[in-house]
Amino acid sequence: MITRLLLLAMLLPLAGLSQVQAQADGRYIEVTGTSEIEIVPDRIHYIIEIREYFEEEFDGRSKPEEYRTKISLDRIEQGLREVLHDAGISPNAVRTQEIGDYWRKQGQDFLVAKTFDITLLDFKQIDEILKRMDTKGIHTMRIGELENKDMLSYHQKGKIAALKAAQRKASYLVEALGKKLGPVIRIVEDEAGSSLPFSQSNVLSSNVVSFDSFRTIKKKYSMLVRFEIAD
Image (cartoon, rainbow, N blue to C red; front, top):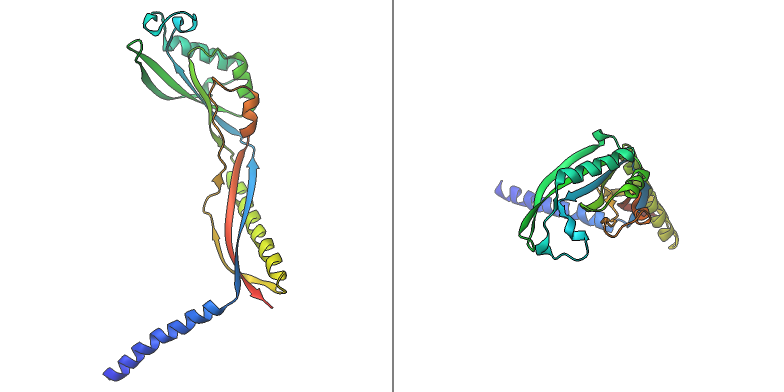
């Protein structure tokens, strides 16, 4: 009985080895297909940070230690909200994201700051804001998250396009060797399409034209596909 069990235990690994070897001997080609899509956003998060400042900062002659006339955050916020109103932005689209303070070492003073997340529906609204904006008290303005309500559908289209690209690549490679492309053996997908990077703009260096380079959501998809090689 012991001899039979030992013999059976030895045969099982050998059987497993034969199966692996058979799979290894199978002919296949493995390629990566990629695709890129551009999506026009229907929701744009525009981030504006306001910060207290001193009038003397802009007179061109005062030193930091001579600054005396501080412009309050409430006054700056009121001016910002007037600009947003004139640009056609609803008050409901404006959300306070963060409130903090900033230590101005030169004048030994704290300057209070506030960040707003403004939800826009069109990039033209940003253009309208910039036309009216007084940059005094505006520390930064940048584009945050871009959204589209049909993003899931775009993800599906991007993945399908990447899969077909892999099929085309594999097909012309095996045909160059006088073979034919067989059925799919395995598909490995990138779980989420990666976003192509874009630069965020600061109000101190940006203008209307500079926003043109990132008015769309850019996604890249990748699919690793293994095909059988047929005669």
